[in-house]
Image 1 (tube, rainbow, N blue to C red):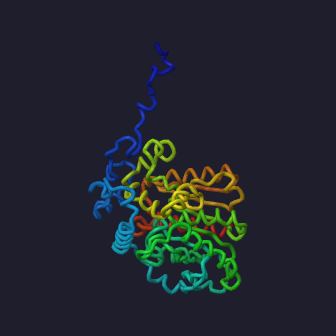
Image 2: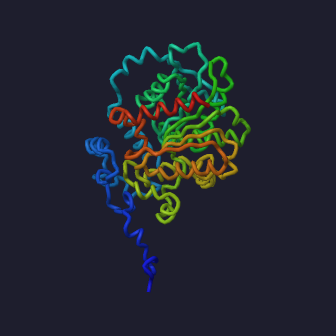
Image 3: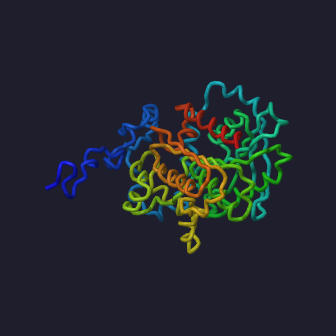
Length: 382
């Protein structure tokens, strides 16, 4: 017989008393039913039919179907439509237009292709040397345009706070029907950073900080890993990744997800669906033997970087959202950075879903404003 100080054999009284969060406790839970969800977020998700009550639109589809160019075109179109219809402006935005100087530059990428970068600079500081935040946009490295009202607004918000922002027009894996598999987009990002470094004097730049959200965070972390491998990591002063999409683990068996990255299960369907992300990850990696190799390659998926890979990297900040399936992969990378001796900080925004600070600016401006202040403070204090 068990004593009063030990549980009966085969039972776990602590687990029995605890309520597991999200879908770990109730597989049928929807975002609007999760008590952790921010009330304003639930309200707008209901209004736009994104609260999960409609069911999983990708249920039953194979990874092969979800990784098709046809499906990527649909994903791109639906995301761009959402960006257009979601309100994004705040009072005072119009007055900021005169405060920002914008220009478009071109740079040669690794294969000789000319690519663009969009520069946002505080107009009143046009003659001052400033840190630059090199921004890589989200979209799973596969979709969304570089210049649109959401991404441009983000860069403008950075510039208003007194840094230069440069948004890089890297090649998406899906590009109007053309398939640019890994590492094309990453190589564009690396070429852009090296070009900016080589032109620091004429651009009036001090430190270079890499920053992105979701797939853009992947490219930020991967560019730093690539720079270390190739011997130009000194060009990068810091990296700030928001809601990093870095594991490619979205098609893993449930048992492996629960063991390594339980948020993929806990927050499934909270705006993001792992089946859809598995298709996008497969499309990014590409086909054949090279595509298979990319699935656990650190430059494609930084989650797989070793501690030795991370040693010697510049300071990092990682910001995750509590109700994001990707939350745990960002936390895992943060811990890997610490184990490697990298100066690293991390935070979790409670009650919100993936990329709230960028996409839901008007709905929850405090998250946008706090993120902008944090990124710019990081850039200025390196």
